[in-house]
Length: 237
Length: 269
Image 1 (tube, each protein chain N blue to C red):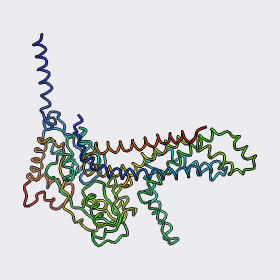
Image 2: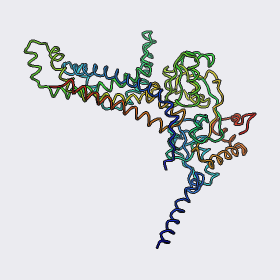
Image 3: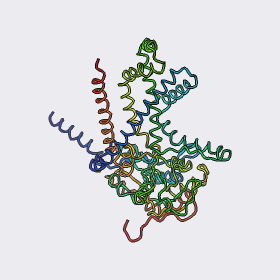
Image 4: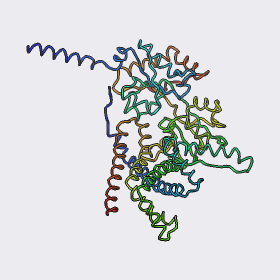
């Protein structure tokens, strides 16, 4: 029943545009990982701090990030925040005389959404990694006269990052694939956005998406392989 | 023995060759069902009534086509981007889905003569004063990705060299973005724009101007090589206009007034 004749010429003409899109995808994924790792460490520190408010922030963040679809998180970053801004303005404008503008550009909303998701999952990676580090490490550090934050930053964290290095590449791959969700918030410069828009114009659905899939595959494969090489070099005992 | 095998072989060959000669038109008539891809978030062309039944201009058009073929119609709901994959993968026979007949698309699918034509309207967000369509210059504008008006608008933004174009996946998201100020203005089908302004669901948005573009002629679409079916659809559209059914459907779904002229002076077809 599959009544389709593949015509690749038209699709291959779009390859330069798609490769430019792949660069944007990579850029978003890399930035979202850097920010995600930063926030995940912050969340981990919050959780370990013992302060109930900070702990609560971590719990809410991780629960929402891990138990709702990434699509929902990205959609909310774009439409949800903008709507919230209008809602708040409805109160502040007459009462305080200023408006609140929470409108994010598609790029920032996508980056924010993926970062939010990354931080949630990476926090769990870090939690697992921390379990693998013996309690005695902290106690030894403290007995050497380090303060609690110092022992976390200088002794525990380096080991935590090392143990969770390979699981982190997993999240990196996921971040690359998540950029495709930008299409719902009008992102049209990333790999999926570029492909999606071209498909709607020339209707060569299967060829275009097949090429995009190959580009995605190559990108993620290169990342996992190079991560393994880096790990083998860095973490030699 | 040998001749028996040969006879069986010939019989088998003709049995398999037979159906292969039949084209889509024969297949539809033989199967007794015409499966149409229709977009149902695009009133008044396609939408759902309170009981979730498909209704609209395109739905009736599909029913009419099925009736002339002597088969029953089956409405298959698709989104705009899904129309062509649904056709290609054999899930539907034709798309009766307000598909603009661009030359780019005709390289991929078989396009009939136009069965409807849309005018496009420029709609501004709440609180933005615009005098004419040219005030879109330098603003953040957007439309439903891949539609005729989106292609025009993106080209316009490129020509102006300033402003930003944002394509959304559905018409609903475009108007949501417009009501939130994520977009300053959009270009959309006049019928849809008027319906959305009147609904009041999107705040104080307003129709500013007519977009200065060639009317958006839309066609029935099927596989590129199905000439039998394409010919049939062309004649069917002609008959719809000739018999007054086109005007009748226009009155039923769009309202009073004269339906868009489907002929273009000075050319054949």
